[in-house]
Length: 366
Length: 186
Image (cartoon, rainbow over all chains, first blue to last red; front, side, top):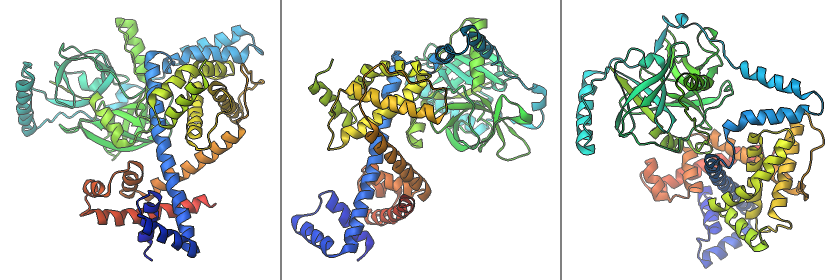
């Protein structure tokens, strides 16, 4: 008997899709043929395993959603509660053995030791290509203009003419309109706009730009921008592991482009410890895009690639963002709140991207 | 305090993967579990991990036909979390004074064992699914997990008709089973 037919019969029997006569015949067949009986038992077991796994996956997904909701409400402390916890942890750990004073001194030195050594910018100059697309070609340009005219007509907002001469990527850090991208993207720009997937454009101003770490943070200044919520990703403070699979979304073209690869080294160009080396295919325009691991954590930001080698790309580690936020808080007294709830975990990639793409922006300027 | 009937309803909701039920259980139990874990050398993040795993165990239990909770839901969850946390502490060789207990506990060893076996089986299935590659993986997931119909699948995967898709599906399934059972029987 053809094995496919037999498997089909087993599945129909299991799902109650057989009429009585067929059912009887099938049961009889199983009784009289040990081999078929064995196969049926095995297949039924296998299918139930597969279904159980699917059930648990769906359940963990819901669990994560509920957890995220409770974190947003403040019922469960998210990543921000960690520092406090560390003190409690040390307190508990040491109170029996060592004096508390020593433990607290430990906490303070831990706090000050987080300043990371920075590599000098001069080394990055020649062999590394920043991934900004400076050659927005004429044709694309025309298309954009037409597109924008159409948008303007439908949205009724009167956007001033904007002639961009470069394009890169950025993504939201905070739903109230803070976008992170690379410092090299914005450093010579007179005007900047960001554009979401739908093509809505907003003016933005850099509020922070650090050419050493190559990070810049923009604030959307347009009043037409509505605060968004539900940023689905989080930012780990710890280092990512070698060989971890990663992916990115970016705008090397006018349309959003997905790319995947892996973490190939824990340091960047010339041993720069503030960035990672990743292996992924990127092009001018990818600069400023998020580097995301399979759990939906943003481990870095794409910045540059080695000119003479293929697939050698550098990404700034996410923990630099925390330092940037601290500086912004200190210098400008602006508090940017990173998302604490991750809703990408346990989703397949297609669904992850669907959730993500609304938060990744095109950064353009002239 | 919840009545037995209320708890039963919660568990029925849980078995049906109802987010409202999940949320209620979280709200009523998480704080106590967190307190226990922080008291015993853990971070709040540990509490989140442990609680999630305990919820999965509870979910499996609630789904099984023979399910009968002989103690309060709160007690059961607490016992599971305690066991999970002890295990993690041992595994990481963390400094471990006798774990303080702030509540009564019930024996959960059997459930833990079932859970472990299950985790192991799931891992086998996951790796097997990874190994068969695309489009097999998506094809099987669409049919067996997302429960899409054959004509639907034929269209989205670009097969000329449902019968072709079905033949392809069985080919993939046979490969998947082969990989799965090769490891399972070891």
